[in-house]
Image (cartoon, rainbow, N blue to C red; front, side):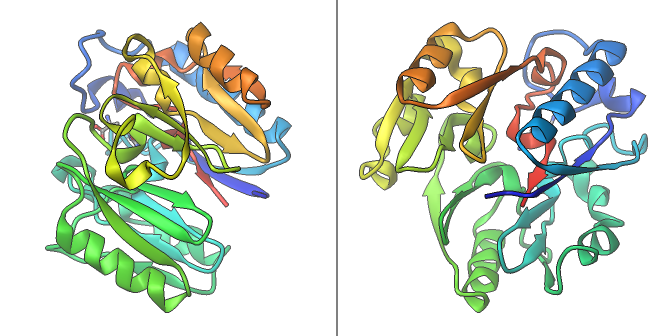
Length: 253
Ligand code: CIR
C-alpha cells in the first residue's frame, strides 16, 4: 500500500518542455487544472500528497517521477540523462530526508531517470534508454542491494522510458504494449495487452488496488476493468504533449 505521494506544480515554462510528440504546445491553464485533478485522484485513493512549488527554471520538472526512486527502505536521487533536466535534483535531498533516513544518489557518469524503473515487489526492472545508461543502472542495483532489494536491466528499443510501454498492476498483472508484449524479461507475467493505437495508455498507475488510467482510451479501460480492477480516469492530455504520462507526475510511496 502507498500512503504518500510527492508532486510538483507545473511551471509556465512547461510549454517549452522536451518532447518528441507532434501534438503542439500544452495549454498551461488546462495543464494546471489537470494537475489539480490528478492530485485529487491520488487523494481519493488514500494518499497524502505533498505538492512542491513550481520550478520555472526547469520546464520538465513537473515530471517528478524521473528525479527519484522511492522504495520501502530507501530513496535514491537520480541523475537525469537529459542535460536540461539535471538541475531538477537540486533540493530533492531535503524533500526526501523528511520521509527517509536513507537517501542515496546516482553519480555521473552514471545517468538514470526513474521513469525507467519499474518496481515489482522487492525487484526493480531498469530500462536502458537514451536517458538511463548501464553505469547508472549498475549504481542503482548496488544501492538497491544494500537495502535487500534486487534489480535487473531491460533492453529497450522503441520507447522514451521503460514505463512508457509497461506498467505493473500488482497480482502478477503487467500492462504491456509494443515491444513489451513478447519481451523475454516479462514472459512470466500475466500480460494485459494494450493496442498500438492506445499506446499512451500503457502508462497507468496502481494506487492501492485502484488503477489510474488516462482519459480517452476505451479499450485499455475495458481491459483493465475486465481484469477486475476499479479504475479512475484522469485527463492528462496536456502532459501527453510533452511525452509525460500518469506515472511521471508523482512519486508514490
Ligand atoms: C522528458 O522528455 O523528459 C519529459 N518531457 C517527459 C518525461 C516523462 N517522464 C516519464 O516518462 N517518466
